[in-house]
Image (cartoon, rainbow, N blue to C red; front, side, top):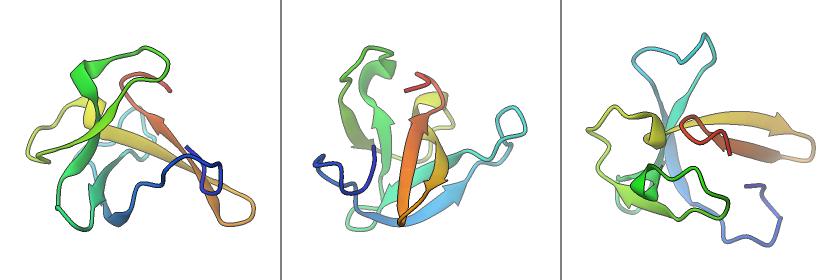
Length: 85
């Protein structure tokens, strides 16, 4: 997902770090400001176009964890740890 890509943005209140990084790369919970819930890949899907939903953040599963890559022009690229997409 990229800001400005025409895809509906995920409004984040903050990024919460994992207790233990995955493969020495910082992975994050994406927490919605309005609900306090985490973005996760529905049903742990690895399919293209999988749904992203909000869910309780008290579960330490890979489908709730995200890698955040900074891009130019204040854009970020998000990759789900479980699906690699």
